[in-house]
Image 1 (cartoon, each protein chain N blue to C red):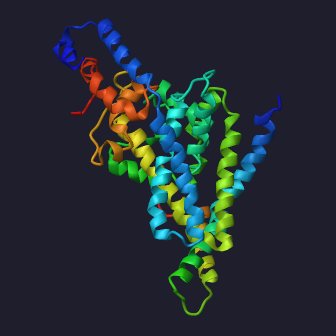
Image 2: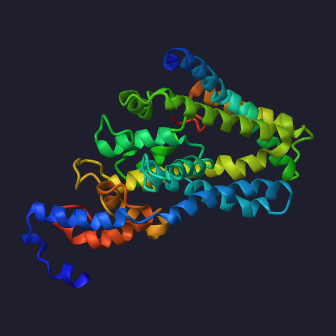
Length: 294
Length: 75
């Protein structure tokens, strides 16, 4: 297959021929069962939960548990992201329950509601880079320094009174009901933090949950939203997302170097986007995608 | 169908507003965090109980966040 692909003159192919080739390649990857991300999601939450009794019982030092918790909270989003796209199982399929369970359970350390993220994320896919309709548009900034500045300032109470793009997206799509779930999760988190703090476990609560969450809430929008869509000036199937080379590599950037594949085929499992990208690369170039040297 | 948006959300919004209010966060989380951190570091300032230091520093930050709208002054 590799030799055949190399011998093809991509520039001479029509859009229809490219489309057929592209879909054929993508279809093979969409059929792969994403066992890795299922294990990742459940194991990650389990490890994070186990840190609490281990630290409380002085079996594990808080200073060892802290970086593990940072990793856990940061790694919590992506398994749910595969579940948001029903990659494990679609509605009506036998393992649908597993898809939904993974979506909810993996997000526990990240204190985020699964369905709320799913519906708003679909709007992001439908309107990527649209200044009005893309719920993630606020994340865009002219450069990295501006992104981090914005990430800090947007978290200040004065900016919390602005109408939330996520809430707007939910209202627009008739999914406002999931806000109750979102509110309950956030309130529970705050009450647990307060309870732990006044029970003498404020440092543990800060280092196992609060601070890791603050860090993850900057890292995740940076790599999952800002970087692959930067400069966010173009819309359209082959232009709204780019690939990029990360200083932290593909693993360090949560697999986002190949985010362009995800936007074209959201049902390809995260762990298989690098292989799919390598196969699709000549087609993506022929389509005019911005691959930034990858 | 229960009119969730009209009846429950105002209540939820009020609860949320209270739970997420900067001054509540400061008193419920930052004050004990500062006090317990000082104790863990074995720091004592002029014999003042650490919880009072926590209350002064954490409460001060909470007041700044409440009135100025920022935990770090700039906004």
